[in-house]
Length: 311
Ligand code: RIB
Image (cartoon, rainbow, N blue to C red; front, side, top):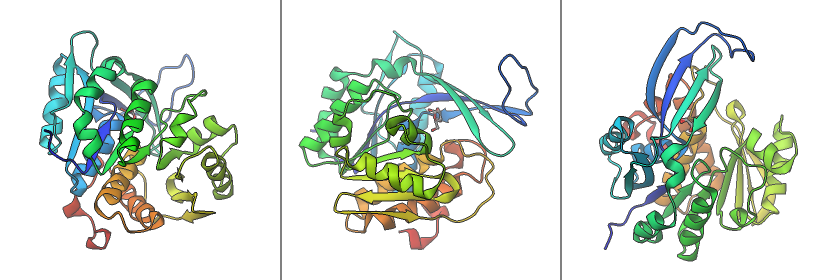
């Protein structure tokens, strides 16, 4: 018998190796950066950490290497109150790593080497099954094998667990079952472009791609738009709704989408009756806090730091 968790994330852990530099280098160019630091990242783990910091009872289903980064990551989950009952270690691959450059306007460019994340498969999901099927919300992304993500989503859906799928990083040929297995399909502009072939440079474009993605079979779609907030489309009401956000000065946007999704998972699990648009409005505000400080998880707010109107 497993404990019941409100939010379970099946996904990735990465050690973030972050260089802050005035701008991104061109191909073949070397430039000076002004700061380097190592942090905890990976889209799955980031989303789980944000949900936990909002107050969700969380479990992470993931695989790290049997190495110093993997050991440190397990301690990081414990420090954030996240269950590590389904965090496994392997000797066959290193803990995932992300090389990140953040420029002076807070934008980022990321290369991931997923390593141990890609060894999370059917056997690990079977061991975590009781937690997945009894959760309120399951969250998946694409930094682990797509087969494992899809299997987890289907396992949850078959057991009436609400699902959030974040197709990040986007892949050109994605199994169409991902759409059908998503209660909320949440992507950013570039992921939406990759999946639909339509460019997204405005709220109107996001409305259009949102509807296009909705027509592929998701119950609802959220397209995040950075400083412009997000667009929400639902199959129950096919009119896209733009949810703007507050204006802030961005120091580092790395992980802002993960902060949004972690907060959304918290709201879906703990306030299931509020409208999705309102959940998205609140998640926008949580993500807006995260961009104002450098770092990924280090910038994610705790419940005590957020306005009470968000709860
Ligand atoms: O979404 C941000 C995350 O993407 C980083 O933490 C990095 O690890 C990559 O997975």
